[in-house]
Length: 254
Ligand SMILES: Nc1ncnc2c1ncn2[C@@H]1O[C@H](COP(=O)(O)OP(=O)(O)OP(=O)(O)O)[C@@H](O)[C@H]1O
Ligand SMILES: [Mg+2]
Image 1 (cartoon, helix red, strand yellow):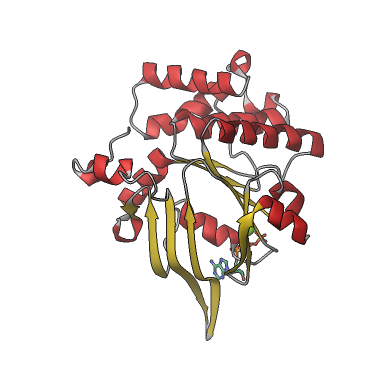
Image 2 (cartoon, protein in one colour; image 1 turned 90 degrees about the horizontal axis):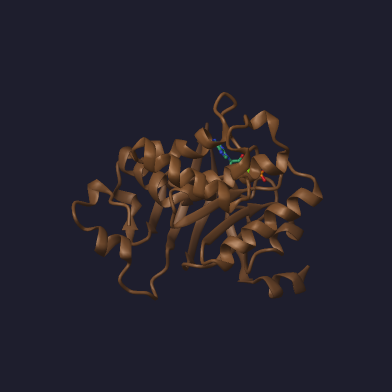
């Protein structure tokens, strides 16, 4: 368990989420409202959602439906206008920006459409970066980063620069980076958006494998066929949840 200093010894209680039946993520009536002149945009319009450890959830919806807004809230990158967000037993609505940054660093592994690898660092250094932010020393950082690269099958490429890898390999590096700190939650925003269909399949199979190993995954996609790789689908429209259920039930409705 990684200690979050601001919890001041309450990690067990907050982190461990003593009640095994308690959700990892709980959104309670979340609103995100943007004010554009006289107009109010309800990007998230009363979203309540619970996600348990070990789930693989796809959040789907058309462009502008509020997916990224929701992802930013789940990822503690942004705070809601109204409502509460409880992550691993921690109420994030009362956190300062620094505390949110720490939660982000230690509890969440991010995977983005464009990989977001730093071009001037080799892939081992890229994977080490979040561990450095989390305060680990050089030796431990290197060891964990190497283990993480092994998990995605790229340990023999550790010296390569990102530009020397294929798109799929770069995405696997970004997955290794997301996994390195052993996060409670893996949050992927259109993880296959920049990949061809064969490489997309590889990456999706890898996410499935991670989920089989017990990792909790929340994946944002606009593509219903990509959502089929998850186990549960949440569809949003105009900032509201229109469907939340088993992937088979979702598939039957298409
Ligand atoms: N910073 C902002 N200021 C004002 N309006 C915003 C802002 N960010 C998002 N919105 C609006 O909120 C709504 C939801 O946007 P969001 O980015 O969450 O959609 P999305 O589902 O991720 O779409 P896409 O699939 O195109 O990425 C849209 O109407 C958008 O215009
Ligand atoms: Mg978006």
